[in-house]
Length: 125
Image 1 (tube, helix red, strand yellow):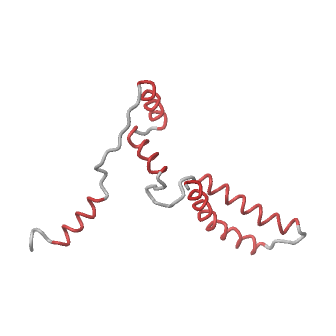
Image 2 (tube, helix red, strand yellow; image 1 turned 90 degrees about the vertical axis):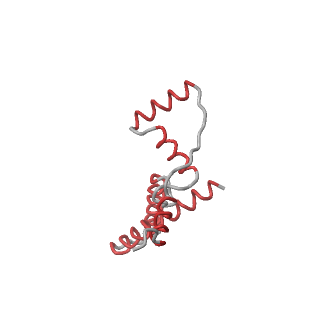
Image 3 (cartoon, one colour; image 1 turned 180 degrees about the vertical axis):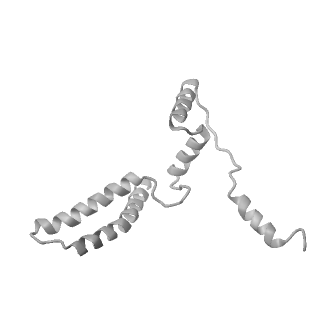
């Protein structure tokens, strides 16, 4: 069994590529640094974690790479879709069956993520 197996070396290189080895820094005055440290203590995170998450969110990347950084936006869009799609038939005097309502909920739970991603992408342009 060779010590330098090419498969093992390739696997290690792929694993190393995900390590965070580079630094991005900024300078703060005393008042700004104090405010940052206070905020990080309040939310229970280190300044490094907090700043990294801010940078990745701004770049449109998150750890799970879902494409949507704000779950609040996704849920608001879901509620809006539900209201529009339920109130329109009711305003027209139509009834909405339970099956149609359940199908609508399933469609909305999928569509809201896609719509939120598109809105965020448009906002970055």
